[in-house]
Amino acid sequence: MSFKRRALRRITRFENWILERKILLTSIMLLFFLIFLSSGGLFVLTEERRVWAIPVTTRVGTVYRFYWPGSVMLQTPSELIVAAIAYFGALIGLYIVYEGIRRTQQSETAHVMAILGLLLMIVAMIVLYVLLYSKITG
Image (cartoon, rainbow, N blue to C red):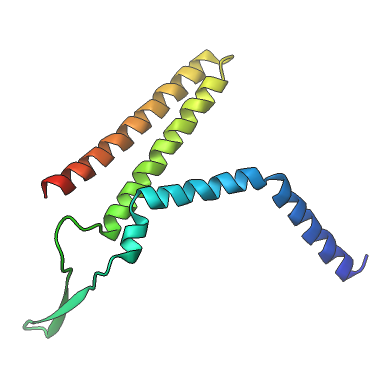
């Protein structure tokens, strides 16, 4: 078999793999996009914040300290990361609960998975609550 034929066969197999799993891939891409939006990613990208470096002279020499202008109420990239991790953790917890419900034949495994998934979702909600409370109270 020639090189061109093998390359064409590989490309065709890859295209078939993508076509077979297009619903799954579309769902995963949509899920990541929704996590990005709900954790404030669009606001972080469009917000006009400049990081200013302030030169501070010390005995060793000049050191640059970074100053972020604005108030506490602005969305920061670190909040984006924390919120995205919390949302992702809640979705993983939801998936674990779903898998636990599917394994009804193995009752002990189903109970452990359901409890673990619920705990993961509760921890994610607590993290999001603390993040929101710290933003509101300043």
